[in-house]
Image: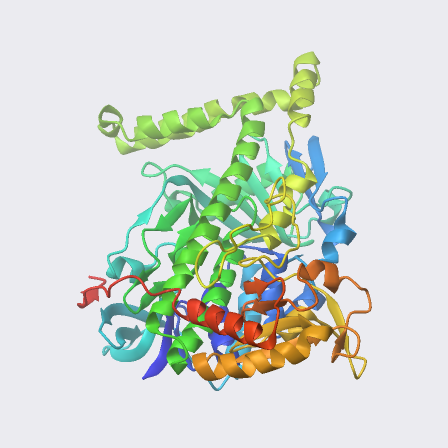
Amino acid sequence: MSPVVIVGAGPTGLTLSLLLAKRGMASVLVERDSDPKRHPAAHVLNTRTMEVFREIGVAQELEAACQPQERAAYISWVVSVTGRLLGREPIAPPDLDSILALSPTRAIQFPQNRLEQRLQSRVRESPLIDFRTACTCEAVEPRADQVAVTVRRRGASDTERITGEWLVACDGASSPVRRMLGIRAEGPVLQYMLGIYFTADLSRHVDGRESTLYWLMNPQAPGVLVSYWLPDEWVLNVPYFPPQQQPADFPEPLCRELIYAALGTRDVPDLNVVDVSPWVMSARMAETFQRGRCLLAGDAAHTMPPTGGLGLNTGVQDAHNLAWKLAAVCRGTADASFLRTYELERRTIARRNIDISLQNLARNQAVHALAGASVQRLKLLVAIQNSWPFRQLPASWQAGLVRTAVQFGTRQFLMLDDNGPLGERLRARLTGRLPTGAEHYRIGGDLGGVYRRGAIIAEVASRPDADDPVLTYRPTTSPGARLPHVWLVDREGQRRSLFDLLEADGYLLLVHAEGQPVWDAAIAQARSQTGWPVRCLAIGEGAEHQDPSGTWRPLSEVEPTGAILVRPDGHVAWRTARVESPQHAATALTEALQRLHDSGAASADEAHGTVTGR
């Protein structure tokens, strides 16, 4: 029996298996596909996700392999790529240098298909990960002390049963495992989209207006063109409207015509349509992230619009939150109830990220509405599509009327290309409403996620949030917050980030040099009484680690005898501003560890029974 069975080897499942392996924990990773994703899909890796990848040793490799940021660090609004440019805004905020100083790594753009290839290579190198591709999960049987998972390898007549202490479903937005467990996903479907992945060297067509995204105000190809890998890997995302329209209604010749319309030219001799993939834009959340010994992570737990690039990142950070807790429970350091803190913490962050994504989407929709394509018109179209009288028409009539309605709804886009006074006024009005660079990349939304409940000991009088905690990041050691980054130098002169010194399996107690003798004794007593591993790290004059910049002491927000207890995932669990004596320190730390250990105890076990996908 494996400690953990993971279903789904996208970024969330791959990251979870690697984080568990780093902690010496074996897992079975089951993936239905035989090869990494072909379609580029997501492409933004934010700073916090790159910090997770730094922990598993892939961040530097990704940074070295990604494209130079300046090549496409813009978002453009166009009639077509080679046609009229309506606006072009930088993605990065003007204070980029100060943002880069907040972390040992940085946000990058790296297509999901390439990311999965690199993560899979690491997974295959690990002796602790049993990676099974081309295997479909057919049934899940939760039991009191384990979970049985029935899988079938592609082409095999027989099934195989895998047992694990815990099951984590990372199998995507449509999550068969979530459905087998009877867990509902709640929230709206916003739009059905078709991603047309193509290759073509567009260097001469985009020269001088390179961008990551091209929002297309084009009645022939309304949507967004994404540059995944300049100059020749692209995805054109366009809406479609089921049930009258289906992906099969978009054969390659039609896809090529849509691409030509988006580009504003047919002069693309090397155009190759690689893949056409339907996807659903939604803002949904599972009613629970845990049922018995089964947990949900990534898109299986929550989905959000791609406006903001938070979907993949939220999933990777789910894995980061979950891995150390699973390891502690499987080792017996923590009770099974400790895993309930996973949902307490991550549901709030997922809700926040969904809201950020919806706000970003609303800003873009407002721009489109100014140009004549309002959300209300689309909602009206969907209502008509689903009405009884409309559904009684012949199917060919329905499909034709939907095409006509879409063209009618976006016809005002034509005015954006008009050289007369009406076109000038419309363009001027639209340009004044384009989102700014700060709205595209929100550092508070990236690094400022704070857990208010869960495996933390919140303070009665916590430090106030920034005026806009999504837009602005304020480094703090307040419990629940991400530990601030500082560069330290050890006695051998090696420069290391504070994040590189975190414990994989236990807590790190950060103290000032003058308080170390008090806390060394306290740790010994607390460890013996609670069983939680804790290591002390002192910073300052005479200590093992120095802070040459002098930034740590004010950032720590504690006095010389104070201490900060940091979790393996880099979030602050507890802190005390000061202690009066060694015994005070020992008592405070022991009580904190005991309260953290008990933080998940609350709910009764779920009823058990076999559930299947049939």
